[in-house]
Each structure stands twice: as structure tokens, then as C-alpha cells.
Image (tube, rainbow, N blue to C red; front, top):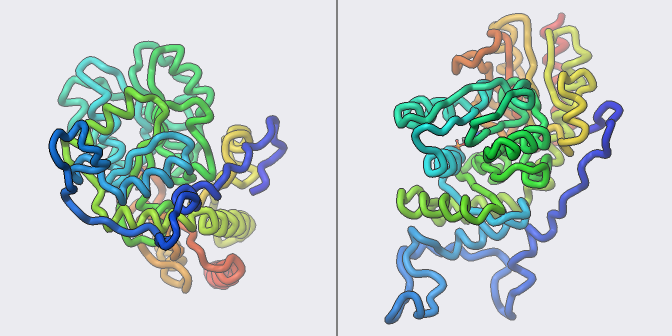
Length: 381
Ligand SMILES: *Cc1c(COP(=O)(O)O)cnc(C)c1O
């Protein structure tokens, strides 16, 4: 993407080769290049477990296919990482053990809906003080007395952006932890831990796995106390990834860099087409020069992301756009190989009936653009 007149240098390109080679660098002759899947529930543990030398003992505690996935994700994030069976599994494993009665937590009012549902159902009734703050305002909030700030940037589906470094500085001054849900951009698009955040959470159901065939999530942090508390939650609650899912997500992760790069190139091109077309009322995309948070975008984000928010005049026009686009599946979620789209009002999001979230996939950019131009021209005719 080409951000408008950056005031500070754009973020550096993170290394991806270590994600691919962390394991293959250490292969002995005859070992498989592709990581094998291990689905064993139990392992040989002779005598005293603390001195038996067994790297694995029982698969709710740890198992080899998680290790492969977690080492790849750790190479991506630059921080120790724990794998979870879904993004919500990862988010709950941070919020539930770290917050107790009397704690104040700030959550995004315009972020992933299930996080608000989790807070209303399980945090508020336990005496945690939950406050919902719009993503565009959290960097300006007084954080005195706050225990944890959970950010999702860009927000979804509005794609507003907040300054992670600014929030982290104020949060740390107030003694609060900063958690960033980095699902939309991944560590290739934005590096919250390097911007000062304490914890990254991600739904790997989206771009990390990227093939719409497995759910997963992860938590990354350099804070050892937080990591151990999150691990303890996973072990004792038993919300653990299955071996097959961990294996699939590891395989998907190996192509994340090429897939995300294509998606973001296409998303930028599509956003520019929408911005210039009379069939469209408005478009929001972090890579457009008129984005309301463009200064933060320019210094914080290396990619614009795979999501484009486009608004048509009404529900009927929006539905026609989705139905007539040949290379577009009507579906929820994002980050997969196939471009998909949906009107977000159908889930009750605070948007107009003509608001469509386009989740760009891996189709060749020109094929996607040609088809979008054809459908938009027909809508405008
Ligand atoms: C999808 C998503 C989640 C939840 O992830 P699951 O894997 O469905 O549990 C959380 N945050 C964001 C930003 C998401 O897009």
C-alpha cells in the first residue's frame, strides 16, 4: 500500500524465512521435510515424571504437533506462543485468568462481537468492571485505575485504527496490560509487541490458516508470568487444539506471506476501484488516502489488510453486488483463499443496510478487478 505522506518511516519488513525453516534447519538425514502429525494422547513416561526425560507425557499438557505450530508462530511473532482451538479460545484464555472482581477492563465497542458477549456473560457477573470504548477514542482515554486494555485495530467492520504505541505508553503508566487482537493484519502487517503491547491474540481461523478448513487461535507474549497463567488456563480448562487442526494451521501458515501479500494488493486495488465508481456510496480501507486515521496507518501498518468496507445505496443494491460477482462467495469470516462478502447488518452490526464487508482472497488481482468493474458498471447503468 502507499500511505499518504508518512510523517515517520513505515515499519520494517519482518522476516518470514524463519517461520518456514525453524524445524528444517535441524533435520537429521531421512527425516521428513513436512512436519508429521502426531495424534497420540499419551507418551512413554517411565518412573519419576520429573526426571524421566520424557518431552511429552499427556496430550492435554503438551504434544509434538503443537510444538511445531507454536515454534512457527513464535518465529512469526517474535515471542513465545501458545496455540488454542479457536480465536475465542485464545481471547478467553487471556481475559478469564487475568481479570478478577474489582478490576476495570476496556474493550472495543466496535470490535469482534463475541468478545462483548463473553464479557457480558462471564466478566460483568463476576464483578469485573467492563467499559466499551470506540477504537478511534481509546488512545485519548484516561486509563487511571484500568487493569487491562484490549484493542482490535483495525476494528471490524468499520476499519478504524488506533495508535498501539500511544495506548501502551499510557496504559503502562497506569499499570495496565495491553492486549491486541491482531487477527486482521497478522504480525506481517503490524507488530503490536514491538509497539509496546504486552500480549497478542489472534484468530488463526482467518489468514494464518487461510484455507477455511480449520479453526484455531494463539496467544503470544514476552511476559513470562502472563504466559504461564494462560498456559495454566489451557491445561486445566482443557480448551486445547486438536492434532489435525494444529497440523493444518501449521501447513497454512507456511504460505501466509504469499497469500496475504496477494490479498492486500487486491484489496487496495478493489478499494481504489470502489472509491472511483459511481455505483458506490462510500468505501473505507486503511490504504486509501482519505482514511480518517491515515497518520497512524502510515507509521503502524505495513499492509492495509484483506478487508474492504463498501457501502451501497440500499440493501437491494448491496445484495445484487454480492450475488452478481462471479468470484465472490456469500459468506461470513475472512482470510481464506476465496473472496467472500456479506452485508454486516444481517448480524446486527451498527452499519447501514447497504454496508458490505468484502473479504479479499487469493484470486489473481486483475481477474477480480475485471469482474468487479463489470458488476459495478451494470449496477450504475
Ligand atoms: C474471527 C475473529 C475472532 C474469533 O475467532 P474464532 O476463531 O472464530 O474463535 C476474534 N477476533 C477477530 C478480530 C476475529 O476476526
